[in-house]
Image 1 (cartoon, one colour):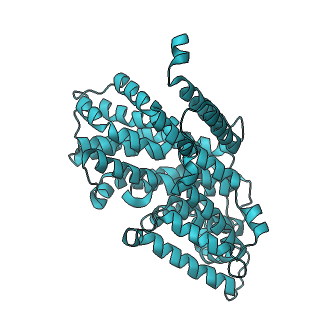
Image 2 (spheres, rainbow, N blue to C red):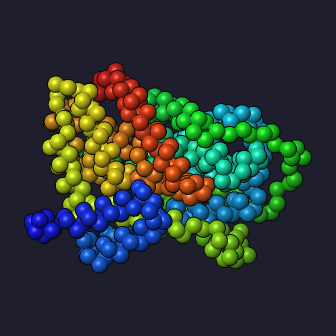
Image 3 (tube, rainbow, N blue to C red):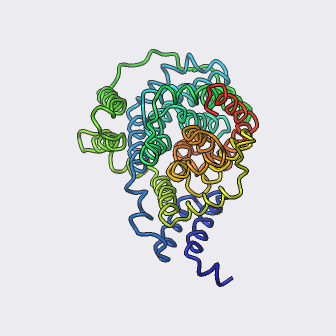
Amino acid sequence: MSFWLSHPLFLPSLIVLATVVLWATSLLPEFITALLFFTLAMVTGIAPPETIFGGFASSAFWLVFSGFILGVAIRKTGLADRVARGISARLTDSWWQMVASVVLLSYALAFVMPSNMGRIALLMPIVLAMAQRAGIEEGTRSWYGLALAVGFGTFQLSATILPANVPNLVMSGAAEGSWGIHLNYLPYLLLHTPVLGIAKSLILIVLICRMFPGKPRPPQDLTPLPPMSGDEKRLAWMLAVVLALWVSGSWHGIGPAWVGLAAAVVTLLPRVGFISGEEFASGVNIRTCIYVAGILGLAGTVTQTGLGKAMGDILLSVMPLDSERPFTSFTALAAITTAMNFIMTANGVPALYTTMADSFSQASGFPLLSVIMIQVLGYSTPLLPYQASPIVVAMALGKVPPRAGVALCLALAVITWLVLLPLDYGWFRLLGQL
């Protein structure tokens, strides 16, 4: 017993495990668990402060923060309701059509807008305003279903588009830095879109319609839309500029987070902006911002302490990787990323998994590039919402209770493993990747 207590990974393991359990079970509010993690990590000194609080310096945190501010402005000016009125007459004929439209719109936007958080901030106010116009009340299961359609459609499906989410970019950078492998847009799209994009979107639509049933009604207010107000016009132009800068990020080099933060600052400026200090205080969910910072800080701490590498080594020793059993090896590699997701979250998994890919390649007999690509199925299919911060943000914006998000996560993960994983294996083999 004394050996384990004195082991350098004992305290980090204990703190990380306690944090993950509290987030998974919702025994405490998520932001309190994050604050508890910060406190215990600092008191015990398991990692430097810049690592523990690194989430506050990450671009993901500032995308969440600025997304909340832009969402408040979109709702306050009436722009969300205007757009919702423009599309609700066409997309609310049936619940299936409504859910499918939201999921596919979330997916389609990923092709032109590189930030998960930015897409959620843009879409959520519009989708929820459309829900209200269709007679779907806040706090109902159908309301939760639409909010989750935005979150799951944005995060899980965008994993098939190389520059569309943070884990993909982390994987791309790690593959280049560790192995000199440069991932290309079209081959990546071809490898992942048929199964993890198209097939998964269809399953997501069916699950939401079944688990969160709804009966939209035709919009009652059929009066013509009034002319756009001055604030609506100014905000629409600003959002168009923001979207253009997000799409052209590879050209000008300014990250999506800093574009969003600049827009948020303009939104808050006296006489120039759109929301007051009181509206900022009531509309910006600081609790979720702290939660996201906690998730990112946890992932950084796991890597810094060596806990992630130790876990990877253990998984490598127990997983049935065998060149004579390719399907078993394929499943085991996907399972490794799923297990890592519990302590590193989706953003952190590719950083560790990709650096260990050569060992996995030798054990499984798969090409190195294929081993790197297999992880996409694992980190894009979280078992619990906290493993994917964009889903957490979508749930917060839609006021979705943790139980509803966990239920959809688990249901989609089960079907992914039973149906999509064999299909993905077959597609890899068809393309000559295995």
